[in-house]
Structures are given as structure tokens and as C-alpha cells.
Amino acid sequence: EDKVVQSPLSLVVHEGDTVTLNCSYEVTNFRSLLWYKQEKKAPTFLFMLTSSGIEKKSGRLSSILDKKELFSILNITATQTGDSAVYLCAVRAGKSTFGDGTTLTVKP
Amino acid sequence: DAGVTQSPTHLIKTRGQQVTLRCSPKSGHDTVSWYQQALGQGPQFIFQYYEEEERQRGNFPDRFSGHQFPNYSSELNVNALLLGDSALYLCASSLGVGPYEQYFGPGTRLTVT
Image (cartoon, rainbow over all chains, first blue to last red; front, side, top):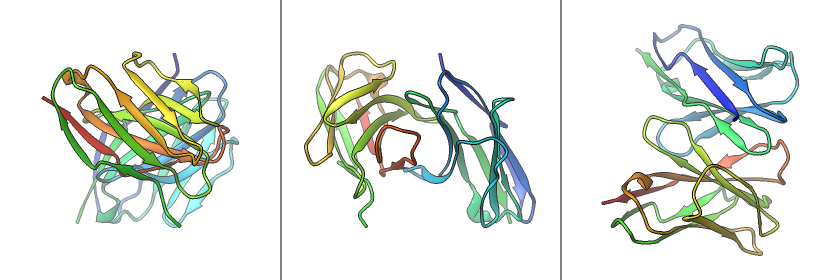
């Protein structure tokens, strides 16, 4: 059975800190790994990764995939209170499998 | 550019009843996937529809069924509701069934009493 594990489960930081969120997976027929931010209802798409070692960046957020070690990380630099959310990692094989998310709280 | 829309926003049903949830995909998308998200957990994949056929299915009982229409919109039907079916039901759309970006709708909050 496909499995996605995210760590840590929760994280509390102060504005300006840098955070690293982890996602490890065990799936058959890997196709892509996606990161989402979920604040209230709909998860908002952040990144899609398909190739190892190629960093994707969007502003203060970046992510990279290691297909050999079966993990991905999401980095957020200079965190802001608006970054407070649940960050979800999903792996698409034949179907999509999500982790349970990391709850990030950024304090002023 | 219209994003993914879902209706209704909230729904309260009684155990044993049946419910239908609706989803319209993002403009240009032809594939719809449905997820169930319980409180404090990640979304759990229910099934995916492409070309009006169910292409993939997660570990959900046959009480969960769906349909996709020629305009790519989709319905999720749940029969014989149980208390444990209370959750946020999310619809996501993408272009094709490959490793493409998937965009989510706002969800339907279903409460079964």
C-alpha cells in the first residue's frame, strides 16, 4: 500500500525564521510529488516535482525531490504570519496519496 | 478563469440517507478526482473520473459512487450514510490522468447525525 509520511506533525516558529518540512514516501509507479498549502478549506497548489535534484522556487518557498532516497523537502525562508497553515505533501502514482500534513504556526 | 467549484458548501444529513455532491472542474480541465478529508488528516483518495469513466479508485466501499458528465463536471454519491462519513469532501481537477498539477475546489462539509 502506498504511504506518505510528513514530519514534523507541527511546528511553531517566529517571524523571520526559516523552516524545513519533510515528506517521505513509499509508492509503486511514482509519477510526481506535489506540495499544497491548506489554510481553511481548499488546498492551494504550491509545487509539482517529477525529477530528482531540480529545485523549484516561488518567492520565499522552495522544494526539492530526491527519488533515490524517496523524500522531498519544502523550505520557507523569512517566515511570515501569513505562512501559518497546514502543508500537505501528495504523491501521484496511479492514484494520489496524501500525508497528514505539517501544521505550521508562525508567531509575530 | 473559473476555478474548481463545488456545491453545496455545507450539508447535514441523517444516518441512512443518501447524498449527492457536485463539482465543476477548472476551465480546460477534463479529469476530476474526489477526496474525503477527516479532521486533522490528509485527504483520502476516493476515485478519479476521466472521459466519463472511473479510472482509479481508493479504498472506499461501494456506497461511494460517482459520475462524470460530457461537460467534465462530476457528482459524488454516498448511500446509506454512516456517522463516520462526516468529513470535508474535496474535488480536484487536472488535465488528463498523468502527473499533472491538480487544483482543488473549496469542498463540501458533510455532517451526518
